[in-house]
Image 1: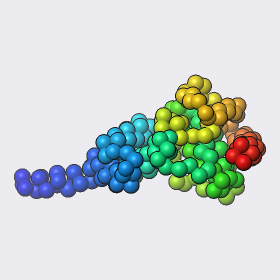
Image 2: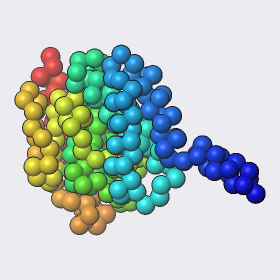
Image 3: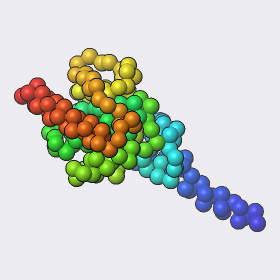
Image 4: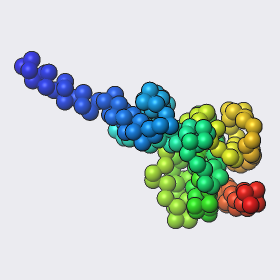
Length: 220
């Protein structure tokens, strides 16, 4: 019986969050070799997991989401240090929960901007998931948000951004010199019906179109 318990414990350990996260950190340390150290990769993976776990309702896919989030953070860190080139402008959208306005803005920017820009989004107090009606109004435009999830605002992604657009998150976003900061006053989808969210979507689209023009003018 003791042998069985030991075998079960070892098997469970192979699939425990810690062991999965350690393996993720090893993969990322190899991917970013020469840019960040192994300790930094591991710290960011575990930090990312802990941050996402605070609001997660279901933890089944949390380690894989943490690895994805950590990879983006490490990319941003390397970009801010000049170790990874930024061939196109980096835009960061920030709202409170990263479940509505900032997700719509990021998705619309990817849709309209294509490979002319790179986009990130974050929340000062991220929610557990995207708002269903936000997903619906973007699906109406053929935009799929199934791979997106709310992410916390971190210093590394702010440092990597060229333009930071805030949406009702107050002073949560740190200010760094040399970046373009905009604050878009928009209705909060949490408080709106489907038609109201469509109106916010359409307003965001207009603002994104203008931002893309402004960034193209700045870059040229």
